[in-house]
Length: 388
Ligand SMILES: Cc1ncc(COP(=O)(O)O)c(C=O)c1O
Image (cartoon, rainbow, N blue to C red; front, side, top):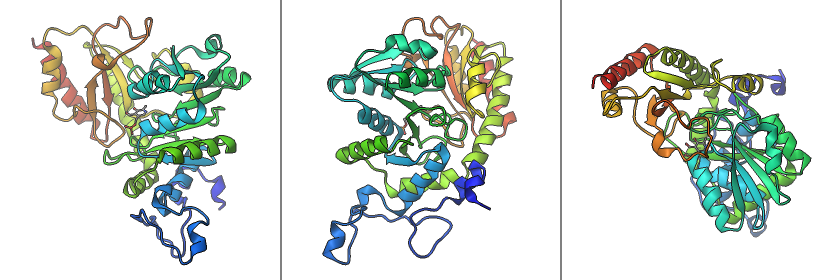
């Protein structure tokens, strides 16, 4: 069969790129800074001439990421935040204006508000549910709009096609953080975005044991700018981490289906609990952006938010102390279930949809444990929460 006609999960398993000679199922990992050449001409010949540019395993990861995101170029970074920073700095320079969503991952928002501003780039927040209304925020010097959908912690879904259309009409670039969509659930490039970024650290690696980031595009001129910026900064990915990302990609589809099924079951169960005011999960019909999610995504995963009803004094401490399966830890996308309180992290604009919420906001990652065990764990924590 022609592999180009195969389903995404088939192509992710069969992408092998840049191998010389003997082919094994998995790519070799060359731990190398120095690359040796037979003659002097090779030293200044075709790249890679140095390990930082990436070797076999990196080429294989880039090729598989292009399959995943429908891209023609993928540039690797050592983590997701660095990939966001690489995409942004490739699109703007001093004197430019950029827009980023109020729901952006905190360190990405900080990069915009502190690092970019320090280099003379004006960075302003927008309401992630603004849609076509973004046009009113454009200035003559607006060069890029950053999108993250669903948003970190608060799970708003962006009307990406409307934002992209408004931006394109003014020659403004769009960059999407597609970590939640992981390429299989959402394809920003197919919706017209110029750049898609992923923290490979999450679902691609999938086992909470490595970092990685990637910047993908279909635009050759933009790809050249991203490559030049990456080389100027010396951005790259360690070969062992690149290997873990390739390995993770092979099972991404099956893991995501399991996270999705368990995530939905837990979301419905939580929505029916008396301690819960609302569940912020875009695949639930009650989510205000459910129609956008249905239109632009092909599935969901294990990450969503929960707004609790008002909690008695000391209730949250008792809740977290009673958990034995859910870990208290940052990150997501691994095989394990996690929960974090979010209120301490929320730095949203006035009028954000979670302002004035009933009680504390939690973020849950539903891992691959048996759902009945996860319900038992949370039920015990809810009992402790109320037992004041
Ligand atoms: C949406 C999103 N983007 C980017 C990142 C950054 O990824 P990394 O931890 O690999 O730097 C994260 C991390 O949590 C994230 O949730």
